Amino acid sequence: MTSNRGPLDKQEFIGRLLSPERAETLDPLVIMSFCPINIHDTVADIGCGPGFFTLPLAKVLVNGKLYALDIDDEMLAACREKITQARMGNVEILKCGEFEFPLEPASVDGAFLAFVVQASPDKPRFLREVRELIRPRGWCTVLEWYRKETEYGPPLERRIEPDELVKVAESAGFRPRGWRDINGDNYMMTLRRR
Image (cartoon, rainbow, N blue to C red; front, side, top):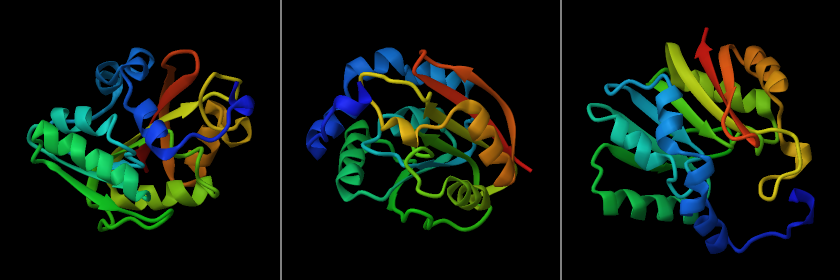
């Protein structure tokens, strides 16, 4: 259960995030099929971690560009290694702050946020800052945890239910376009910039 697990060593955590078992419950191909991504888009993968979704995103963006952003140097190093091994030339890996991103306002068509909204100490501010990066009528895909006990995942108090995410997203200037269950523990929501 989430409340009974101790903290993992960073390398163990990276290993868990990249494990084949994770792909069994979070199939990147299925998730990409529900994402409003276009092969020509410029996309920001914010909170990219070690690149679990970065590589699938880059593969979809055959004529586009992907910015992989994270605040953690070890995560960025793992992501860089994964992208280098795959020889993906359309990915730029950048360090960011909690609310500061090294991209120009309205410079991306979409943003991909996999399990990062729950980690923010100020969810409305975080989503407002993400919104500023997205071009008018652009999209944002959010993956999150239901607020329930699971074997892995963040503490319950940080998790955000879909109805709560809708309210936070609306207050940040997004228009929610629906959500879907992924695997009983996680869900996916699509937002559009107003």
